[in-house]
Amino acid sequence: MAENAANFTTTYQSKPSIFEVIAEKSLDDTLYPALQKVALFLSSSFPRKFGFLNFYYDEAFATVNTLLQYYYLKYYDASFSENFYGLKRILLNDKPLTKHDKELSLLLLVAAPYFKRKIEEKLQCYRIEQAEGYLRKDFEGIRKQFLSYSHSAFEVLWHLWILNNYLRYMGGKTDSQLPLLHLLNLKLVYSNEQPSQSFWMELFKGNLRISDLSFGLIRNGVSAVLETSAFFLQFLQAWNAHRPNYNITDLPKVDAPSCDIKANTYRGKCPICLQIWLIPTVLPISGYIFCFKCISKHLQEKKKCPVTNLPARLQDVVRLYVDS
Ligand SMILES: [Zn+2]
Image 1 (tube, rainbow, N blue to C red):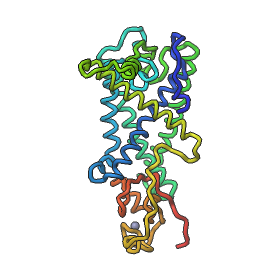
Image 2 (cartoon, protein in one colour; image 1 turned 180 degrees about the vertical axis):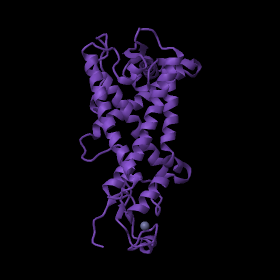
Image 3 (cartoon, protein in one colour; image 1 turned 135 degrees about the vertical axis):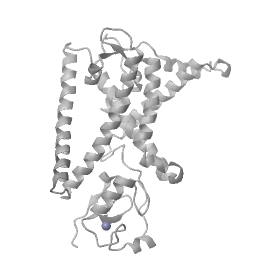
Image 4 (spheres, rainbow, N blue to C red; image 1 turned 120 degrees about the horizontal axis):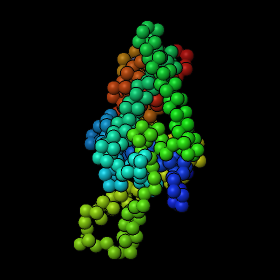
């Protein structure tokens, strides 16, 4: 999908094609993991200054995303990724967006993915507990299992709804390309503005001078830098697509830790409860082995290895099947 996203398309048709909409969505989906990569690099390289990014990444991203989408909705009537693909939002009756429409668009562009990720993070913990046979048989366990299955069913229905919307759009039955746009009474059309390209052109020709600096020019400059970064991001995704097991959300790789005094202290026992492991579970980023219960509770609260302080998530733990 990311490969498709890196293509620029021409605008000969009056209606945006479904491929442009998919490419735009693909770029939108790439922003979160790409910035997460930067945040993980900063939090593991400078834990004192940027350690908070590991714990509050979702909130930090929501803040950056709010500013970014607010800016593009205000000046281009589009989200960042829509504007990147030369698209903008208008009402189904062909009128431009009102202030209220922009506020609703901003809410759905920022709040919906934030809460979706929070719910999925919680459900991922339930699924791991279930896979490890750690889910209790009482009401709490049944509630977790029910929520986990309901979410899976909802995901299937939601994707079917998106597919149905795509087919209806291609068949000319609806003008909205996505269910959320339909909900807001909006559609995507081609935008005629191409400010950032002219910015680069002027810059390379040497026509930009400090004395020319105006708010409009700075605005175009900011857009040009953001959009060029987005293009390189898509390019990087496409470039790395052939690498097996490559995932842009992977944590930064660190050198294998040497067997220091700490490792000897915890030899044969869990570094958290200092007992012999119960369901031995390794945290690959640091190499320490914990009880599943101890490490899952710790990671949910602190999101880092209790011994080395390296950033870690519950999804990263690996169950060890060893003779005790
Ligand atoms: Zn333990």
